[in-house]
Image (cartoon, rainbow over all chains, first blue to last red):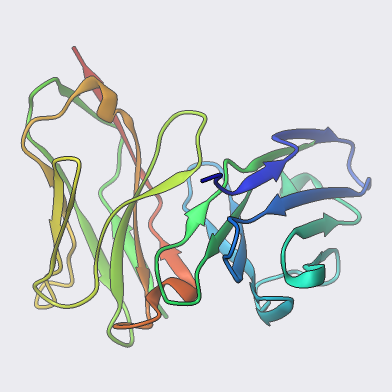
Length: 113
Length: 117
């Protein structure tokens, strides 16, 4: 069974430029999460989707970050414009509705210059 | 709010040594507890979990016991191998019981473990 897929794996951009990350969850997983992981820290939740509905986006900086999960499968996380402090690893995870564990993708490492 | 405090790393051990990585937590409800592992260049993988007090999670020779009285979930392994070198994260989900996988995970800062031959 394929795991959570994320792309790109690495991205380097200039500050003030836009950037987007893509996630394809495990087939059949209705819940999708985006986490931010700063260097030397544990992941922190940005947003959680149940199907296509964002049920927890309280930690998402909405002035520059946006996310969507059209059709309740793939998801895209966008930053516009990017700032130096956004350099981090962006992780996507998915889980089943029955409360089993979250499965993580390999992440996208973003560097903002 | 919820929080997880992990033993600071890095931790370096010789092969076949005994491993303990300490983890304590603060939560408002009845959390489920997890250990995740991140091997170099890979994503986080669930190592083991426990959903209620006195439960013991185990996998790949690792084990951790949910201690409500000390709010701890220490990770242990009797004999580590070079292949265990990774970063280990303790986490909690404050839903408790059923449906724990669909709530926000609160992570510790991670402990980097290096095993030398």
